[in-house]
Image (cartoon, rainbow, N blue to C red; front, side):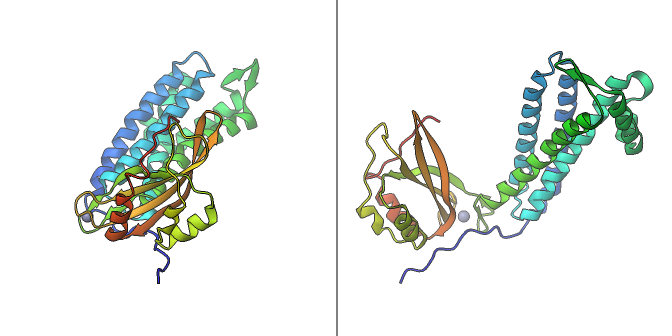
Length: 285
Ligand SMILES: [Zn+2]
């Protein structure tokens, strides 16, 4: 009898040299925060600030992923803490750089970096005095705090999520001490009965392929793709994911239905044998 396949769970281990990569990550965060504050200060168009902010947050997510990947973090809590440290560093440093530009020569960045009290005092002062205006409306008080609060949430939460997700959803081979590689669109096919597909796939039963159809190009309707992650070194550990590609006008929207199902080498080989029948479909989206 086929039983339900297990889901991949990170081992909880951390590479001993991880603190070194954390230090590198935080230095990169420091540099990026200086750049962010400089661009925000010198940007004459308040609306462009949103784009600069988006770039900053994406950069912080990339730094977190860098730290987790090179630090070989397989512990979800540690992944979250790395994201938190990255976010808090970014928030603090960007304020320390920005404030002197607003209040003039009263204080400099070096002082603020070592004095949270003084920083807090200045932030309160600016919230009363107001900072800038949007559509001719002077922004201060509650509205300014709201904007700052949302900005702070983005700067802290995005790296936290990135750290969590990088650990949780990427296969790590404990034998070879290495991350797996992804083979997306390993198999692509049409299938009429989604519940049956899910049920069989979760038990490692491939008989659903008898009713699956290959995809004519370009695809005309919703189709499924199986993604694989595997250890490229020992080729002994694999996970399987199921993606539904939903047709939306000229595009397809990917929906991850199942992720991280552990499969053995035999099942992987059986899937590979089906590749000539259900080849990968690449779509632009
Ligand atoms: Zn391996």
